[in-house]
Image 1 (cartoon, one colour):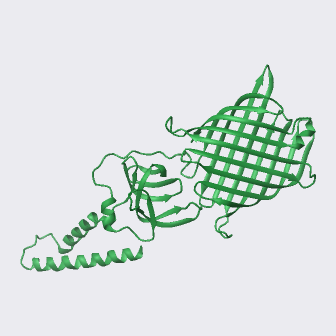
Image 2 (cartoon, helix red, strand yellow; image 1 turned 30 degrees about the horizontal axis):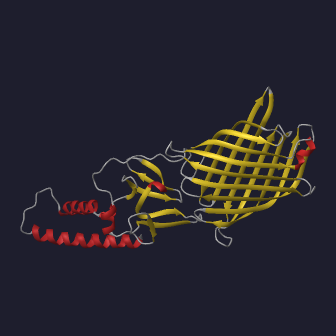
Image 3 (tube, helix red, strand yellow; image 1 turned 90 degrees about the horizontal axis):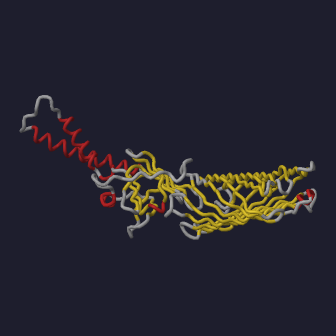
Amino acid sequence: MRSIFNNLLANLGFLTGAITRALQRWSSTARWPQRCSLRVVIGCLVVMVLATAPWVRGDVVILKNGDRVSGVVTLVTPLRVTIHSRYLGTLTIARSHIRTILAQQWVHVINEDNTLSKAYILPAQNGGGWVLSRLPPSPTLVQLVAPPAAGKAVKKHKPLSLFGPYWDNQLILGLTNTTGNTNQTEFTAGVKFHYKHALNEITVDFDGGYGKTNGYVDTSYAGADVIYRGTIPQFQPYNRWYAYAENHDLYDGIRGISYRTLDSVGLGYYILKSKKLEVDVRSGPGFIYERFFHGGSVSAPTASGGLRAVYKIDDRISLTENGLATVSLLQAGDFQATSITALHIALPEISRGLGLLTSFEDDYDNTALRTTARPNDTRFIVGATLNF
């Protein structure tokens, strides 16, 4: 940027000198108006040159439907592009809707591996996509790509999330079939908040189900799960290690668990980290406290281990697996294990943000045997999802 600024000053100096010499020669033979000074004329000419120079035009995002959004590109992430437009304000556009980008100034870029960098953005040579560059675009490229002065109105794209560009939240409404201590199909609901930006990731998940048959409560559970992951860039391999802290709370009226909390902190590692497949494992010390309706309780330090896998089949379909196991350090026979396998299908042709979710959940808790209940329940869930 400093070299561009120096070249700009040099060009302006050369241009100003040339105009000054030409006007001085012309002024020796021509009569100037009384109130028109040489400096005013030179200033007007410089302003005209600056206003028509191609390098002062703003950045441009070209959408696949042909629309152009001009302004200043401020952030590029693996999923979205943020651009500030003078007339439309700040827009967050999904990358799947974008054909190409031209950014004439440094842009903050969050890469697939969560690293943060700065670069110019230039259209790819084949006309689709874009590339990051350490050098600014040439004036010729700017003239070819920059939006014309007159064109059709640009559609304003709302952010995918009401919370901002780094959030991916989801509301779930559907039915759950529970087997184990009961065998019923009842109503279920849940809400999930997911934040991911640079080196930080937070997931907050609430879910529950309730139902009665002939006045008898045969489904009654509620859960809350919170996990934080913070990438540690100092550890090698780069951006594979992370520190985590998690908390899992559960109420299960059928198994007689009035309250259970599992807490853990430790380190995690990304075994695979690509655009389509991401697999990470984590492990660390923890603590469990569990209280039962019959009045008994369990509390002990634990060893905890977890696994998360996300496979993006395409832009619409994703498959996820989340597993967690804890073992008591005081009583080796006491352990808990949870597995959640889910398939999500986006349905943009029906409505923006709408989708379909199917999941299979298995929660095993052998301390529940103390309540004379079976140690595990399995749930098969089918529901509609709405991103917000």
